[in-house]
Amino acid sequence: MTHDHRTALINGLLGLAAFLQDHPDVPTPRSLTLHHFPRQDSDAEQCAEIDQIAARIEAPITYSGDHSGHYATSRFFGPVEYRAVAILAAARARYDAETTYRGCIEPDPVPATR
Image 1 (cartoon, rainbow, N blue to C red):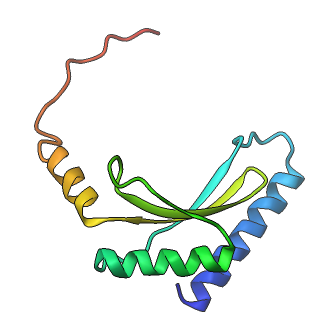
Image 2: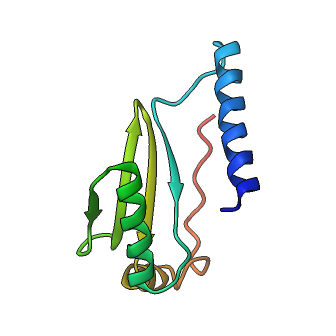
C-alpha cells in the first residue's frame, strides 16, 4: 500500500466515523473487519508478511491449515478488527476446484412471496 492509498484509507475511515457520529439515525453494523491480504506470492513469503504484521500489532498468529488454509493475525479496537490474512496455495486451489462449475447450474426460480 503506497502512502497515498494509506492516507486515503485513513481519511475515509475518519470521514465515515464523523458521518456516523453526525447522523445517529443511520444504522450501523455491530462490528467491522478491515482485511489486508498479502500479494499471492509463495506461501512462505505470505506467511513472513503476516508474521511481520503480527509483531507490529502485537497479536498472535492463527492457522487453520486443515480447514480454510488461512494464516492470519488480527487486533481488535472494540468491535472493529484489523485482520491480515494469507490464503495459502492449497486453499486457493481447493476453492478454484470447488467453483469450477460456477455459473453452469441454475436453480429453479423462487416463487414470489409478496
